[in-house]
Image (cartoon, rainbow, N blue to C red; front, side):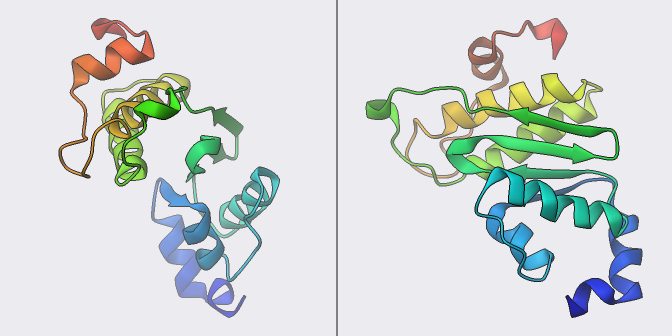
Length: 151
């Protein structure tokens, strides 16, 4: 892992509070580590923790997401959507990350932020096109089963 051995790389990683990647991006960032399974993704993310990352959010498509930090890991399953309602998965990861960031910025705990993000992504895949598929806060709260005051 030549890039991982660079002191500049570790300095860069330690200056970022959260790195959010999908499996492919995680493999590239870790110099080609295997990321085909959830366990492999966790191992790769732990390498990034060793290199200075504070937290890593790995999106796993239909397998959900994992938030990994020195405190441990939290897994978020996808919120089920009937297959016939799935129109376009373009932008689902971006939607997930954006919703997670909103919830975090509002001071929500990790589990609530992950649930909010999963709800947003579940709505996103039911609309064609990346931009038109971004859901409203009200729709996300409804799908997540959360009250406006809780997120």
